[in-house]
Length: 529
Image (cartoon, rainbow, N blue to C red):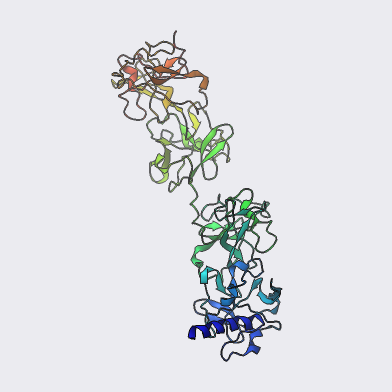
């Protein structure tokens, strides 16, 4: 019997609310049309009727129409006040009335239809707050509100929360007027990478800003921040700068989810993850040079061929033209071809310099005055035939170093004792490459069929895809050596020396006698037939 009476009471409450007032025990129906503010220590200010009954928003009503119908109204009776009387601090112009699908009227506040919650047994209760994470008290000053809706792109297609074609509601943020908020996947933590300095593209994706005064209780205020974008404030969420989409003309629209393609501009919401930190080093896909290492301002980085040992050989006045590259920490782009483990550093303090796979990194200053070349330029490549744009995928590389044989003696490029730099080829990791003077064109005369002597002079092979400026891919070939591949240069089979144990070693030049195994250079003549 008690259960039966409770159900009847619930239905009566819904019925009375639908005709314009909320009735419970001794509530006065006349006071229903009065709307005032009540303050909670946890929720702040929210709307109540003249009897102190809390009013609510439904996040699925983001387009301004009521999505609560049928059985939903049993727990969430509509609020309707044809002759609404606002209390202090409430503007009557913020209220409108909509006609629901069933023909009944419902009062709307700032675009949000208003409801009661039958779970509130007494005035001032807010038991409906965050129910299902879609019902929230009606605050007069939401800075940001939650919406639950189908994502429908500017292409007219429906999308899921993973930006695949399909149906299903997604929860996301809107401003106080119901306009959708977005993030940009190419932004970094507290860094806007889209907006032009002159704001010429701001109409496409306008930056968003608001002072955070009130939020739904499920949203954490500490997740929001503010950045400066060319003199204009922009709000961030978990470090992600927030934007509107210029083509969202009406509240509740979320057309930006497919522009220019799905997922580039995701809606911002509780599911949004912390924005990635801006990389300290990146890769530019250059139309002429291919993949090139740059700083996070797109300024090209360079290798110096004389640094075969991974130590800084550019000092003093050299640094006026080739300033060193350094960063406080190494951060590489997520999901890219770079790995943080490939980077290191040499020096410390003002002389600290980042390295890539053991090679120190530099900028190029064309005026020899320390002023780094503009973003996107590669003017230092092949400078003096010893400076090259730093690429992450060189097949081979160039070294320019003193030849020091296994006997500890210095040798010139003619393999006579003496000092002087010789410019020669290495593999991508900086290991020296040699030819064998007894070989002939495309014929390896050294390696035994069982490879028992391969440890002394290991054969070398690599796919020729990316070469420093000055090398010609047509000079390279490939031969079969007892079932294994060996790279050739101008017909000469290429080898390592087994006792070159450190980057930059070229000990093989004196074994067994100087010049028997010369390093390979641009000047190496074609192998004899």
